[in-house]
Image (tube, rainbow, N blue to C red; front, side, top):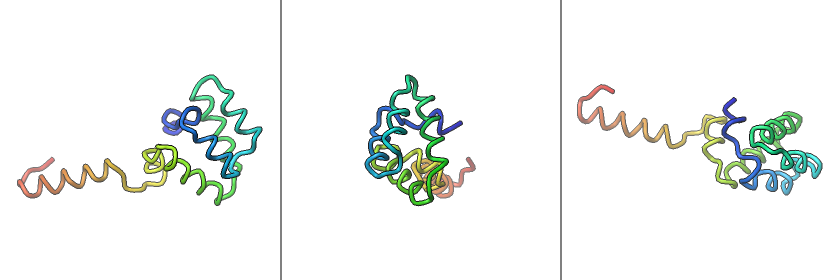
Length: 101
């Protein structure tokens, strides 16, 4: 559900990047961008991605970074992101101050 609600397949340039990288075909790109809602476009993109190779999936992850959607990549790959940095700083501060959060 996270990807359906968070991914921006329509406006971020993600589909164009995926087409350029030969991850999605022209027909798939047209089908995705023709959708009226982001939710439906995301459904179509995820459906197309489910039929791709591991290499193409890696290109999708890289495209997320290139299209200002690193936060999505961070969540789906469990890559350290902003929240982990914040949690680490919070833990360090509480340790120095002798507090329990």
